[in-house]
Image (cartoon, rainbow, N blue to C red; front, side):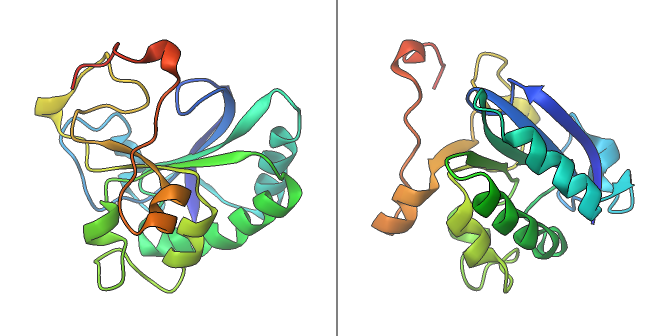
Amino acid sequence: MNYANIKYCDIANGTGVRTSLFVSGCTHRCPGCFNSEAWDFSFGESFTEETQQKIIDSLKPAYVAGLSLLGGEPMEPANQRALLPFIRKVKSSCPGKDIWCYTGYTLEKDLTAGGRAHCEATDELLGYLDILVDGRFVEAEYDITLRFRGSKNQRLIDLPASLREGRVILWQDDPMFAGHEKR
């Protein structure tokens, strides 16, 4: 797997200070995508053990809330297979850090058994994620006032609660920001 970028001390892609990994490769090709150069699976740098360790080390300070996976498309099956061993290491090395994942796929349609992005790594990978931001970016629904997503159709899913309940449970944002988003 290749990656397009890593942002350390990122505050835009999830709650708190985070490290954000932008993987390469995406088959969605959403019009208006902010990261279209990362559509190519060979774009960027190789995701080496050294790179992985640098990310893990960046997550260790107490002020860092967690890791965000973006793209490209982290949930492309080829990327899932590469990310799963890394995410296992993150969870064992950095307990208490949350993991957000941004995907153009939808949980119920694409990431469940029989879905077009479901593979042998999917269920375990989803089990490690805390928040799944799902749905393709839709340029006509772009709204700059939305927190942690680009278009109104995208959902912020509390994945542990959703997996427990067997249905989608939306993540409840900080009450300080409640009512500041357009629905």
